[in-house]
Length: 125
Figure 1 (cartoon, rainbow, N blue to C red):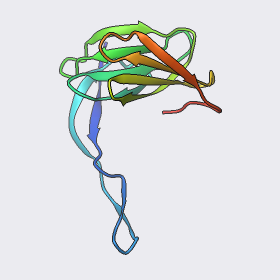
Figure 2 (cartoon, helix red, strand yellow; figure 1 turned 45 degrees about the vertical axis):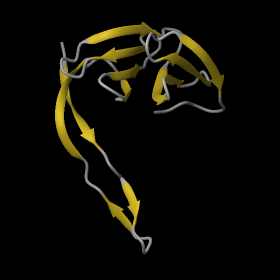
Figure 3 (tube, rainbow, N blue to C red; figure 1 turned 90 degrees about the vertical axis):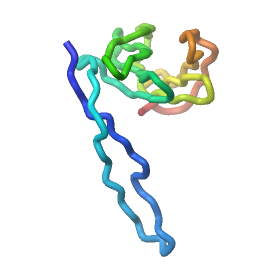
């Protein structure tokens, strides 16, 4: 079963004017897309696919999703961690973990693990 959620275009959340006053921008919903309602998701939308890091111990994954249909095109289970945030750096996906103090690095094309690094504290999206 899929649920729809808003895909929000955020150009700027906060910006400073020339006189250092805070200007606010209101996000605009540009469309909605189908989405797995059981996936706790932190996403990156870098090209024609939606890349998702889904959380929960024993259920975490890295996914490539077709935004037109909501279909999961590639799913890599990451069961030993509670996956959190996801970022795209060049052609590398970097997935944070919540309490494991580790970031996992994957090749964008095939999701092969190409590295990892540690950090202090908790990882959050």
